[in-house]
Image (cartoon, rainbow, N blue to C red; front, side):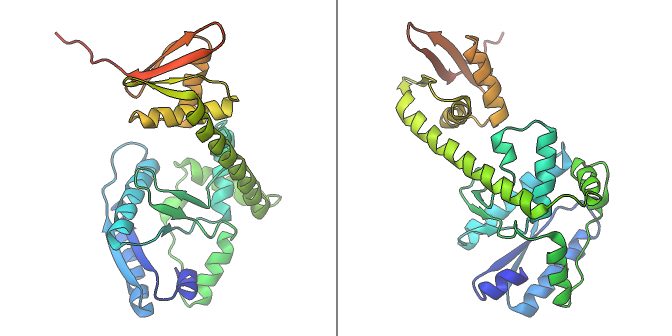
Length: 281
C-alpha cells in the first residue's frame, strides 16, 4: 500500500478483508483504515463469511470473491496483492511435494485474473523478500501486524515455511525467476491450446467433438477449455486424468459432462456433451 501510494498517489483505493476468524481481525482492519485516512487513501472494510471445509482454501475463495466485487463496484482497473518472493518459494515447494504439473509449478503468477470475475489480478512484489517489505514498513514508522495463524502447524504452508526458515541455501529470488520462466512456458502452452481448440474442436449439436493431435500438455489445456465452454469448471489435474482415460479408449464423466471416446481409421475423437438427466422413481 505504501509503495503503491508513492507511485500512484491519488489513484489507488484500499480494501481490508475481515474473515471473522479471529477476535483481533476487526481491530486490524481499523488499523489499516486509520493509516489510509492519514494518507488520504480511500478505504473499504469488507466482512466475509468463510464456508466450511479447507479453512485456508475457503477463506481465499471468499476473499477474492469479495475483492473482485469491490473492484467492479469501484470501477477500478485492477486488484493488486502483496505476495512476495518467500510466498513464491513456499508455493513451489508445496506444489513440487504434490507432484504438480506445469500449471502448478508456474507458481504465483505476476498477472492473471480472479476466477469467475474477469478482474485483473496483479502481484507486483514477487521480486521482494518478506524481510525487505517488513523493513520498509518499519522505516515508515509502522509496526507490522502479525497473524497468529501464520504460526499454526496444522496448516501445510506453515509447516513448509518453518522448514524453509532453516534452509539458508535457498535463494528466493532465483526460485522466483524459475517460477517466472515456467509461467512463460505455461503461457506458450495456453496459446497453443487456443490454436488447438480453434483447429480441432467442432460443434455437434449440443456436444463438442475434439480430435486430440497435440502434445499432452496442450491437450490438457484444451480439455479444460472445452469443459468451460460447456459450463463446467475442472482443474488441470482433473483434465489430465480425463485425457488419460480417453486416450485408453475409455469413457469419462466429470462435472456433469459425459465424454465418449470414438475411434476411426485415422484419428480418435472425444465427444463432450452434458450428461442426460438421471431417471427417478
